[in-house]
Image 1: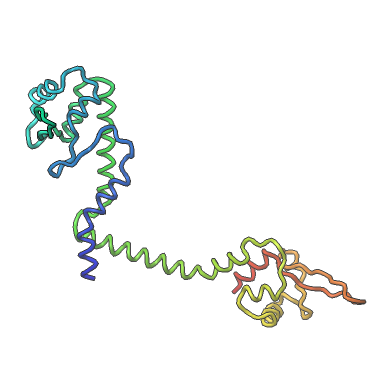
Image 2 (image 1 turned 180 degrees about the horizontal axis):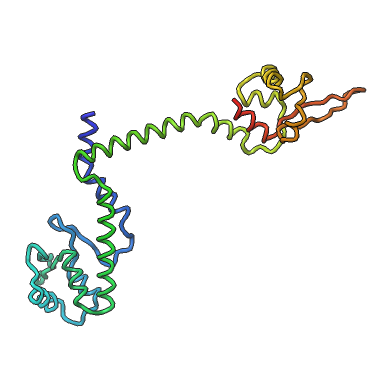
Length: 247
């Protein structure tokens, strides 16, 4: 049990990240990057998406000054690698800052990506509300899942006879002799005849009573043999299912 708890604890964060990735929209308007434990976007990418006519350096600087964004909270900066020239400064901004910059751009592209950010946030909140918030909740979730799996396994085990029977006769539309039916039901021919007679389904001559023929469970075929005519009882596909249900 302790080993299971340890494994669950170690994988909890990975499972939550996986759940997020599977349920978030597949189409991204802009790349989301994790920087110092926070979701961010590259301000240069946002500037390009917004189709701003202002030069990037002036655009980001004026936005920071005008709206009072704070370094280390709303954004961080990183010097990009250079191929011999002067390295450029990259601004990685928080999702909230990105939404505000999109709104103040006052164009269709800004409204589009701001809505995308908001929809994404709502989806994340919905996902996180389904995830355990504490270790105790995680343990309860693991226990509930284990119980559900155990119940499903039990239901499958109980359904095996019906599944086997369906595989044997579920798609059948023809007639079967009583001997064939007995084999499918896991019994003997004579024992099945005796059972059906005792239950007043068959007469003493092993022919079904008329009401069971009319119900579509049996058919009787006459086979000429020399100077005699032998009647043989056959079970229909409907009759097979009916007999199996009677146990």
